[in-house]
Image (tube, rainbow, N blue to C red; front, side, top):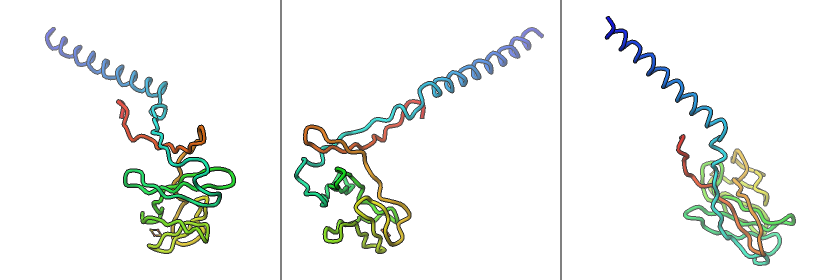
Amino acid sequence: QSRRKFIFNLGIIGTLIIAVLAFIRSFILYIFPRDSKKTFHKYLVSKEGEIPLGEAKEITLGKTPVFVVHLDEGYRVFSGICTHLGCIVQWKQEKNHFYCPCHKGYFDNNGQVIGGPPPRPLDEYRVEVENSLVYMYVQDKKKGPWA
Ligand code: FES
């Protein structure tokens, strides 16, 4: 009889411990959301003055092509991957826009769609200029311990 009661109590205590641990985990995630763990990698992409105003420079980041565009308001960096089906876009200097040859997609120099099937603008990276050097920031793809 008491042995059965002991096992029964053990079950209740075990369940309580699991519930408390789950609560603590949720509480920690609430206080320190995973987003706050976002880290970025900084890449030097150009020197100021290297890209004339209104022009773009293509660079490759790993295997991903990106374009650094020099506009009136400063530098912007766009992914060279078309948002339609992932082809590589081309910068057309004479037209001042991006062109995707796969299905005739067009993006203006701000990465916005101006023609063809792409459903959304080109992906854009954060840019900062420090000491006349232009850097882009790429988010690291690490997973946190709570993932
Ligand atoms: Fe670029 Fe289709 S993949 S328009």
